Amino acid sequence: MERDISAVYGELFVPIVGDGNQAPLMRGLALSISGRYDNYSDFGSTTNPKIGVSWTLMEGLAFRGSYGTSFRAPGLRQLGATIGSFYTAAAGAVALHPSLAGVQTIYLSGGNPDLGPEEATTYSFGFDVNPASLPGLRASVTYYNVDYTGVIASPTISQVFADPTLTGSLVFYDSAYAAGSDPDIDALLGIAIPSGGSPITGNPIFVVDRRNQNLSSLTTDGLDFDVNYRWTTDIGSVFAGLAGNYVLNYHTRFSPTAAEADFLNLGLPRWTARASLAVDAGSVSAAAFMNYRAGITNNYSRAAGGLAAFEADPYVTVDLRFSWILPAEGPARGTVLALQINDVLDEQPPFFPGTDGIGGAYNPIGRFVALNLRKTF
Image (tube, rainbow, N blue to C red; front, side, top):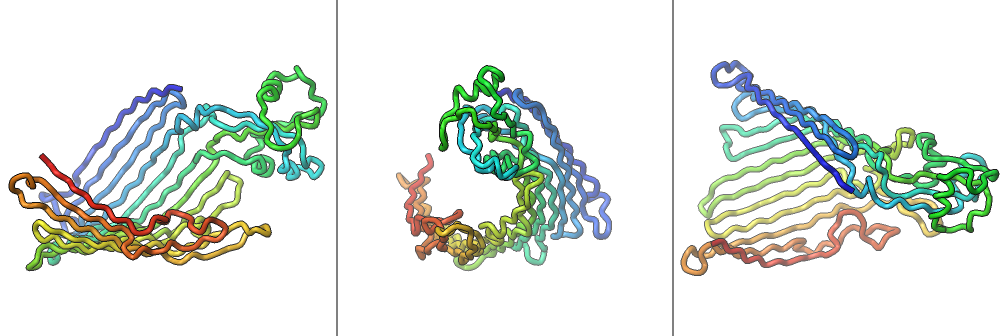
């Protein structure tokens, strides 16, 4: 499969208020406008603008905001992966009528050349602080909001039967079907691979399209923050910082008519943060990092059937890093020796029932030590 892409990008920066026309509470004001046009040979074109505003209220205090759209093109595999044809007993058909339980079903699975791009509308606003009285202090807080639509997903057979949005993915052929009466179903029967159930022998037949589709949506908003301070001491430069993310909402829908799912109750941590403390004393530097991941709430499948809720504890790890710039003389010139220790305390990840004990984006390795030697010429 081939893909040709052409794109045009432009950006305009407009300084409205500057040194020559400042006013009280208006030390600076600037507008940025940009846009991008992309043309894809396999699914068409898309145009995405972005506009941003920066307002310097006073020295050391600036507000900013932006609004724009973006997209992600479907991958070549999502478009052109081999389409498989399988048949099975359609347990999900009972959602239409109890008498349809076990009706033979052919389903398609794989790429879909009719896919469109995934699209998102985003906006954000925040402020930056760098006061003249504390030149080593920098702080920023940003609120962000993302509305992501057309997310590519593949429905299950049960979802096709139960979700009104997916009725176009379901075709019914009754027992009156005879070989040769429909070339499409004949072609499917010719390549169908058993996936449970017995061979199709004239029972009513459903054909279900489970190929990739632009079905799902995601909306999320939250806060990004970063506070750091750098100062000079008798032993060298010292840096301390705290950066992280707080998720306010994270909701998904598998399809427009599906129920909304709150991922903050399905395994997504609300808080993530990283604190750092570093000292740079000439040729020697040392840094310590503390990583925090809030506890989560999720569900798991019980062996006896059904779902049960559980809560996992927060996950905190500590990393250390040391480096030494060797003397800039002779063979040692341009050489740096570094030691990195991740998860110094060998912290055990939270326990997750219903799995092997570890779930989510946690480090199953534990303490990890790396020695690095770098030389420039």
